[in-house]
Amino acid sequence: MIGDNDNLSNEISDINTDLTSISSKVDILEADTFNHVKWLGQAIPPVGEVTRAAQHGPTGTNVFGIATGSGAWSTWLQILGSGDTPIITGKSYFALDSFVPESCSVTAATYIVQIVSGESSGIAAKLAANDYTTLTFHPSVLSVFPLKSIKYPAGTKLWARAGYDASGVAILGFLYSIKEYD
Image (cartoon, rainbow, N blue to C red; front, side, top):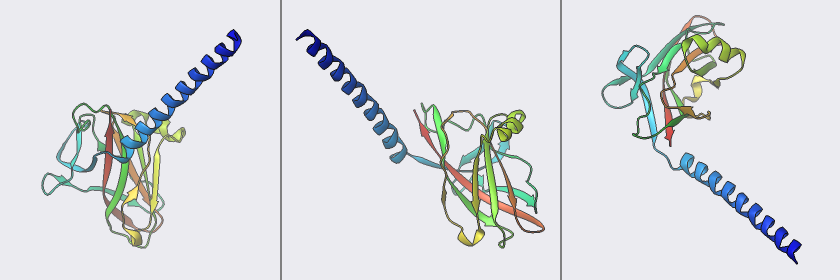
């Protein structure tokens, strides 16, 4: 009889562990689904590597602009500064949510955008490790593109670059959004 009680106790403990895990996963899904989205454009004026983005609105922001040549990547553009997050007081993390190309000067091309996190001195290592987010789109379908990324600690810098598959110089104007988390 004692052995049966030990087995029952272990099974109850396992069930409680499973329920805790499921509850945690539901909390994460709810936080991702029911969360404030913040659309960001280039801060006016940007300040060093601290203030690069601001909430997009009728005044105070522009779209980010990247100039790229055919068959080559643009230079890296900082799109989020160390002081840009958290936007919501008390939040500790953020994740990329969406990307919207506002303008593309060359419309007969497929654009590729890479977004990487961290210090500018660490970008090469992140690229070598494939530790970045990539988005590919064609301007004939200018839309809001969902992005899925890892959660970054508040204060993490983001950088973007673009390339495209046509000749000449292209200018890509864009906004992006993030969600913030506890």
